[in-house]
Length: 480
Image (tube, rainbow, N blue to C red; front, side, top):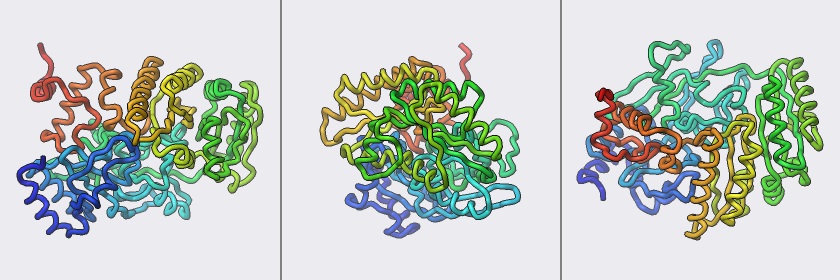
């Protein structure tokens, strides 16, 4: 049911934005009902397309006045249901706020709007010899605001860190329409790190309208290796061996045989050997001498772990082809079934050899096809389950597999998410990873920034047992 003042809300917004940027027609809203996690759907009551910070402020202010929930959305590539509207809520989509506001090559910073696609920043920086290091696999589609919301990772975050390591400052619109600046463009820290608090908060605490990033020089040398193995266990042992010996590649990815087959079926010539049960894709960057030494040492360790073959990319074209296979893996799986559940959990690297077979057994027991492509160097798993979302029984089995996989990973000492966030997908799993006191504290934190619970509600945090009682108890403290 719409709030009583919704008609007035829409009338005001149509005047502010115009009808083409205040979408309410149900047929036009259908493309916005889900994000990359296709089986979690919720039709928004409207999609709002601001072009300036001032418009964002007015949208948020009006939503607060009329009790309309708001969910910020970038490209919709989120894989945890976090970019879908709450029931009775609207989406505020940032596809028109995509400008590069400033590049400062001397201080190596860039300030951008949240709707800018990740790779567009990299393209703008390359002629200056600079790079924005986080590169999620959705880099060619995902927006930087979404990357901040999820604290996105990517193949190169093993060395260069997740998004939070590159965020210097944020401009944020709070739930009442006020605007605050968090962090500092020069990296200065004063008091609690509220910038860090907002990165990864999935739009539940405020709406980001500009981001200042730290930039790095493009490494003078890069070297890419592809190692093939007869089984995934040997590959995982090789990963642990390399890192245990103090070698830190800038990327360390694992791809299994089912993913390789999907790439070939989709006509994507990856260059991965079709007779391998698993391949590892490694990259090293830095000074030429250190890159060569690290790659040689890693090669020896991978051979000792049982690598069947190790090849080095001869030039930039071959390196690009190898990476095209890795980053095109999810798209290739679209040929296998109408829907794909891309999971995201983390386990210690040393537990990979036992956790991966356990995940395989879960999917076999439930009759679900599984493929694995993941950030092996961090133990950040991405089990990929192909299914048909039109089949209720398949959806039921997929959700059961997801629950059991999460339980296995947590039991192994892992974490709920490495980069995709919690959203609605893992919200009810939060008590498996956090005690009631921590969840209560998180509810209290949200209440400080969003007392009306209008910013991306029903995401991340499971509902408390006594919603009205729990949050004030946090704010008052816990003296018995």
